[in-house]
Amino acid sequence: MSAHSEFDYGRAFSRNIGWLTEAEQARVREARVAIAGLGGVGGAHLLTLARLGVGAFHIADFDQFEVHNFNRQVGAQMSTLGRPKAEVLAEMAREINPEAHVEAFAEGVAPENLDAFLSGVDVYVDGIDFFAIEARRMLFRACYERGIPALTAAPLGMGVAFLYFKPGGMSFEDYFKVEGRSQQEQYARFIAGLSPAMLQRGYLVAPEAVNFHERRGPSTMMSCDLCAGVMGVSVLKVLLNRGALKAAPWVMQFDAYKQKLSFTWRPFGNAHPLQRLLLLLIRPLLKGVGRPRS
Image (cartoon, rainbow, N blue to C red; front, side, top):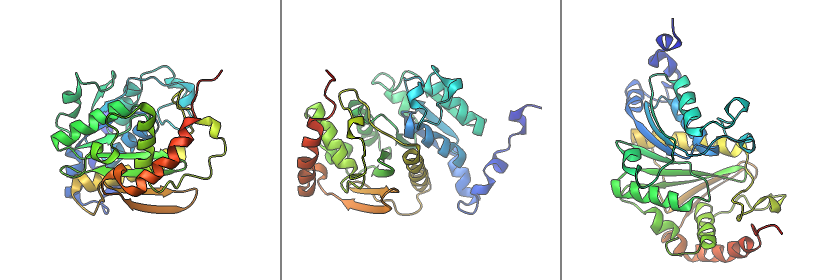
């Protein structure tokens, strides 16, 4: 008897019932979620939603697993070194739910396949690398134009910063205001918009680990796990239309290291006076960080 023939959806996800009704679990089974980026947070998002019982996914990542991914990426292990992330994560999701429809975009998301990636999608989940701002802007703009809810949970320090862009609400561009800005300024504005409360400040013990020129920074699995939990709950609330979920310009940040929770409201996004002050603080910090090594 094959493992697939032994699988039973109702039994596999029966322990969700109680927090979900049978009818709600059926709705989750019919849902289709798109996830771009399958590294630290993206892979964790996929497996969390697969264990929730989501029935269909569009997943995208053009990268392969390397040794430096081991500290935080759920698909990174000795047996997957050199393998495409999209292929590995698709297999992992199907191991949880053999009935799931998982369409992998191993070339990543580009203008040529954007329509296919978002076709029939109920929710978009952002897992793109911090430095890939142009790709992120493209996806959030496309979701806004198509009326697709778009969510991001950023691993900051040892915590999570969560933003929800609701159809008909404030757009990614209206919030972050990065259009026409230099790359360094876009980074500054993305940090400021993700983390108005800056709860992660104060415990970065090796600042030299942040290098914007080399496009790398420190990370932890704990932060990715927190992000996946927040994202899983938020996707559930969107799919079931159950429970309040604050949309942009609201930002939720929880920092486990500092044991602090913050909700910030920034009408006008990065044009808000408090955000302008925050940017004055962030810009000098980025100027000396990430220069090429001599």
